Image (cartoon, rainbow, N blue to C red; front, side, top):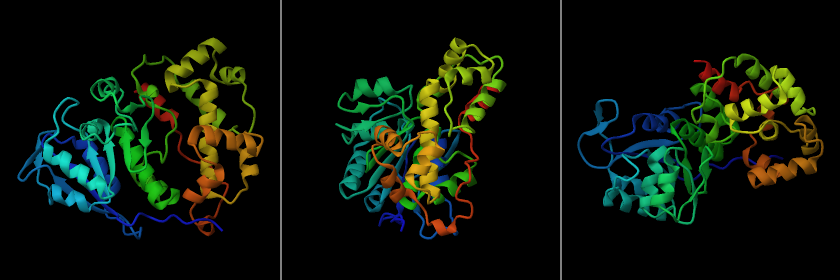
Length: 347
């Protein structure tokens, strides 16, 4: 008997709008939470709450008017803060007071990119882990030394406070929240409609600018080669041969491209595959451990605990959809994550 996901009682999502609004980050909130999705029941109710009355300027040369004001934040279950005007730009006391009040009443607070500075100025991140865009992590540390800044993750989930790195990491975090609220199947469907990966492994290091590789094609193919063999041992030397490189060049090139060592990347891929099987199949943990190259269930449990702070059984209970809806329980994921980065490098 699998556990069903219980969505939160308050499905109202409020996006904060302010003068100088970060347009793309605001659009992420609308795309994930604001679009009507009649195929899903229940689903979120979306509202935009303005910093002040009247017209608000947005990045890109246009303006907007919100349908609600700051008092509405107190009635929301989730508040999205899509960026902020600047790391050192003071947050108006009215916004600080409204967000503090909403959080005290139980609202979850989700920030995208520089939106983290709103929560930091409100004192809500003191003693908590948080992240932001890699360009701002040192500034966040300097201005708010009581915040535990994690500079290399795509997002941090602290329960009622969730922070993300750069703009695209905001998509990752919003999809993570959908996954938390409604399960993996629904989050995957939203991601499919957005044509984005439902979940990305790795941290921000992979996105820091690096020299463009002269011939990335065979390297990218080697990643796909490894993904197709996660159930087997993959020596780094064999991995390098598949990429057509010497071992030393391969290890250097691999870290430049992914931000990880080959061993860490393989572990992340195996854990990702294990999560997929736990969420979408009824396979026993022992079989999943074999399918993903861990060999023994105890090894899988060890890495799950170390990386995710939970067990495979608890992960399945939290995220698994109803199995009777699945026609092919051993289907493979069709989204490749790191080749997306490499394709970007080609362009």
